[in-house]
Length: 253
Image (cartoon, rainbow, N blue to C red; front, side):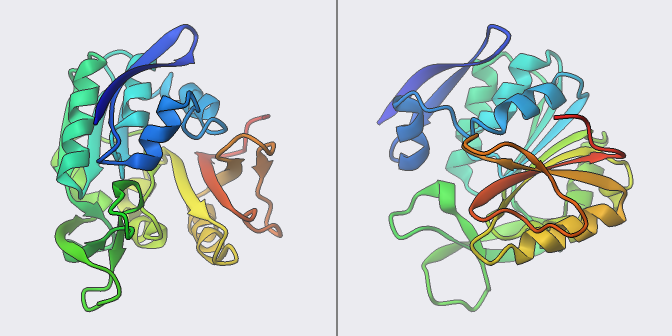
């Protein structure tokens, strides 16, 4: 079933959002219950979007962050990337609902090479948890999807995003390896990472970003814990976090 909601985000701005409990039961339940999606990340993202010129939403799902960016920053160039056609269509629809006229869409998964992979979903089919699997992995059912690198996507865009969100369910390193050219332009990055693997992926992502001169803040998605600047000796906090990576010295948070 489909619902239309209005979600306050910042400075009196409100995002209008279609959600579908068949497309993504988890996301829809949060919105219906009045729970702000990733409330700990939102104020940091609003600040970054407020000064952005172009936003690339990798793993856009139904377009939550793209819509937030659109209402915070008028006339912002926005590009959506998602391998699930129903999600991409809903994200496009939600952008139009929020008066965005600068959108571009890519039906693909972002990784380290151009080609094809298998996209596997959670047993209940929830698209929020779609994940690239090895092409010969029989563990979970899936569908073949196109893959592109972020560098190839930006080349097609013909403009350089200065704000990028990455939510790719375990493909963070491959995605970063596929955007070495884009990283040289030093965009601000929001990257979702998971601590359930001992933080190995997150630490490896931090190493790549440090090599490009970034300073990194770990943000608890729920907002239950204060943000933490990641030093050379600290790992990623357990659980789910979003890394905010900005060029140069970290701001005061």
